[in-house]
Image (cartoon, rainbow, N blue to C red; front, side, top):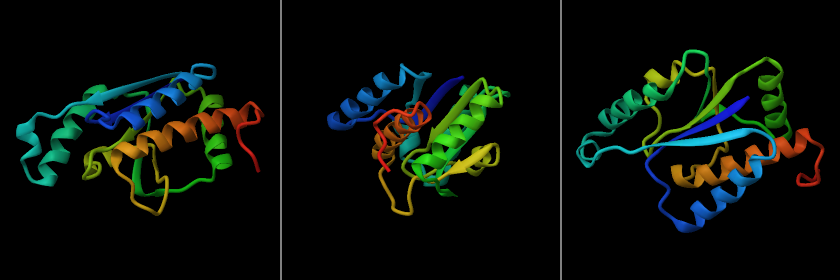
Length: 157
């Protein structure tokens, strides 16, 4: 199984870039993990929020394949414990999922046209985090999930 993380705009804070890289490197031991970053032109960033989300949705759609299992990360999604998330990953693997795609939307969320196509909607917390910080939290939880599946010592209960 391949895992793709789609994100809007570059991660700009160096400490986040470094942290994400640490977990992306660790994930290489378990799964083929990659990221795609969608850069939006400044002209789009000056438009109303809904128009920005629609423009992002058009770019997101270009990266999706019909066979993808799309998981949108949204504040209204289902929350998991780390163990439940590991079980979720395992179910995708045993089901024969070829590409599991996680989407972190931009600062104003994900357009409904993409949310409606999602196979699953996931929330990392009831709290609100910046879309850039979510990248680090998600990368760590993805690594944690695979370490749980391999019964490794990273996760403590």
